[in-house]
Image (cartoon, rainbow, N blue to C red; front, side):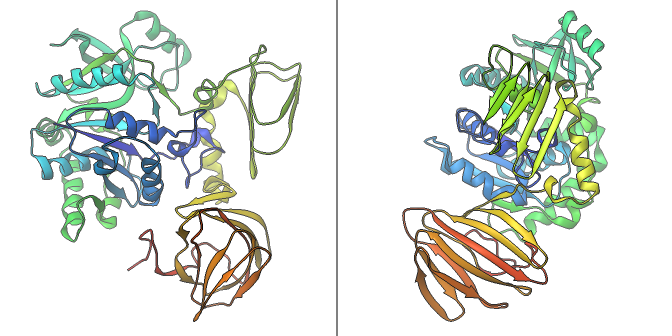
Length: 480
């Protein structure tokens, strides 16, 4: 028995402005139309003898994950979805320990976990499954198994592992040491030596061995996470959807599994994987997913390129023109523009740090915000007003809600809207409108088979998204 655990908690700051905190990189569409988290879920479903797939993600991403899984075709997919929801981010070590305790609770100490980050691209599923089978067999011998990737370039954005003596199975080695992201010269030395592998961040181990190693090397962390687990399941009514206790989880140490355990344990082994692997964590990796022209330029959207080479231009609406520039990433979205030299792609996260420091909304959200019922796009805002374009999917509905500080005007521009407005219920058709006063219960539903599009004008002394009191909600967002 093997239980895959998908980790989907990172914000993907090096892919800003495509990735935002409310819509991080696992949900960015790839050239084939699928997202990274869909592909990770498909890989997990492809393994044999799996009773469930556990996803650990932020509570704010739960509905996004669920929606992406529902778009992913796999015969057993719907029966395998289980979630642990984090109220705050606490890195990989607490997440992996919680998954271990969850599996121990359900299956006992001999069960094997397979840890899969949600931002990897592995096209060859058969080769992936083969490596997982080797890792599972090695994990049953008492090893904590990592998955190593043979370096193809001197990459400075990845961690490395140095291989020691061969382990008991083919393509497996003892790990001599872990190395943090190196400088370019050191990375070149690692590639040339052929003793080093990229640290993929995928792991495989059984429950007992992981808990034994944590007891020896990280006892305080294990104690704190166990306290969080006990508090989380005390009042839980649905074992398939567990929201972690916010108070105890917030006090757990924020630390990676590499620092907490892997660099200390003497029981770590590595499977040298024989498949193409990409960590889509920077624009260098994202650019490589797309075709380039004879000058090395990769263009997504409209662009005119004159005397320019080796650029990646991404436009979501505006015409981009470049003249005499080389080696740039030009990423244009409706509310933010990034221009970066391609050798500095690892430093884009510094932009996000500055935006967060200044509390600028562009680190958090796109101008178009995805919701479980559809999306809204901010068209314009000013002093005491905001204008949105709202798209409601077929057979979807907003929550029954009210606002303390704003009124709303709705104009239907496409489709038919079923309206609840106070004690009135009625339909609005194209070119028809209505007004919702402050503190009035209201709801918009789309009972048709086509998208419903509404222009909403908000007016009031406060227009924040937190001015919503929900009374009923299809998606479980009512605060009790």
